[in-house]
Amino acid sequence: MISFSSFRTIIIAAGLTSLASVSHAQENETPEADGFPQCIERLQQQARNAGVSESTTVDILGQTKPLPKILGYDRNQPEFVQTFTGYFSKRVTNWRVDKGREKLAEHREFLSKLTQQYGVPAHYLIAFWGLETNFGGIKGKIPTIAALTTLACDKRRSEYFSDELVQALLLLERENLVPKDMIGSWAGAMGHTQFMPTAYMKYARDGDGDGKVDLWNNELDALTSAAHFLQNLGWQTGFRWGREVLLPDSFDYQLAGKSQPQPLSFWSEKQVTQVSGKSLGDSDLKAALLIPAGHKASAFIIYPNFDVILRWNNSEYYGIAVGHLADRISGHGNLSKPLPDLPNYTVAEMQQFQDKLNKLGFDVGEADGILGPATRKGVREFQVTIGLIADGYPSLETVEGVKQAPLNVVQEETTEILESIEN
Ligand code: CA
Image 1 (cartoon, rainbow, N blue to C red):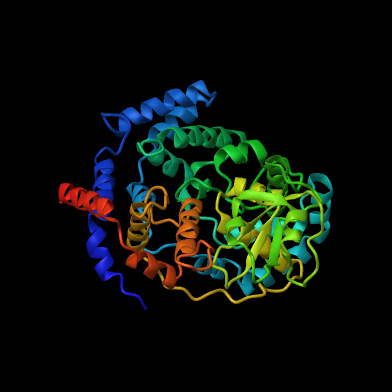
Image 2 (image 1 turned 120 degrees about the vertical axis):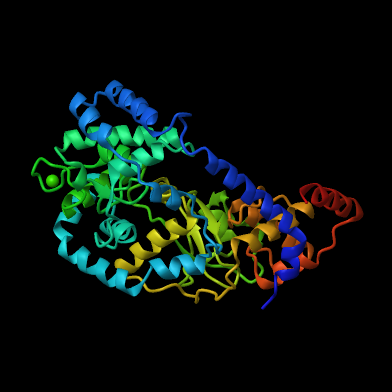
């Protein structure tokens, strides 16, 4: 194991700077200078303008109290960097695969009608449901109106949550709900499929024909809503999400990344194949290559439907988890390679690593501690310079390489000046 302690000492100033800016932001909790009552007045006006009734505006929104713990959840910074291994192994579990297959069998007839109507195969609908709430097991118990009001009165994303709150009030009226039944995640996502109020109002549908759209208690409503939502997000009927692939030993890893799609024929020419060894074919379907856990682990080719999954939840890890879980539920096997066992980098360590890469001239963007596309790109460029396989993954060798890489004289002087200012 590599120790980060000396590395941490050198770059600690950068970390302290970012902590300071967070606590500064926390000093002004509400966008209104005068606080919560004024915020409620603003929200009531916004609700009236959107057509919410006077009784809901006064008796429900007017009586809503803030939930301070919500801001704690919103401010909570993870201690460790989210790795693909950690994310994937917690989400694509044998339990979810088995339960998903049970649900697929239970609703088979209904699901096949949904597929005919909306064009989305059943195993994807089941996979979304499983990942969002464990098939309805964990839907969240926080009162949605109070949660959204709290977030709307907090300056960080006030406009977004104010709009969602108004949609929640309209939904409450449309579906004849009472606030205590309208519950979900701390950020306002509700029911089996964790729809935000805007998505619920626009895309949720009555699946069992009882005239109500109930994503909390009705599985058929939830599955129908997921199918309708995915259709509207642009699902391309007849295409997969992507698939795991094998790369040749000589593969040029600089070709990887979601922002570099190529026709399937291009990847076939580069000897990228299905795991079975079968060809990917020579169609002009655009596909990009993802290598989320380094060159020793599984690689994935992703098709346009992968972008549709990311419009539901904008995370490449989520997209691979949904796609692979759907495959498993429909009978496919596990990944062909084991998930790599990598060190748990803390966010602070990752920020130091990013900061050093920036100082070395490899632009990784803001040192935010997140393993995003910009970081992967900068890591790939660095890896080439020290003769490592440029898979964009911060392996131990890569992290050690960055740590040892000397800054040139000008860079060192700049760093010293910056550190003396920060101290
Ligand atoms: Ca219904």
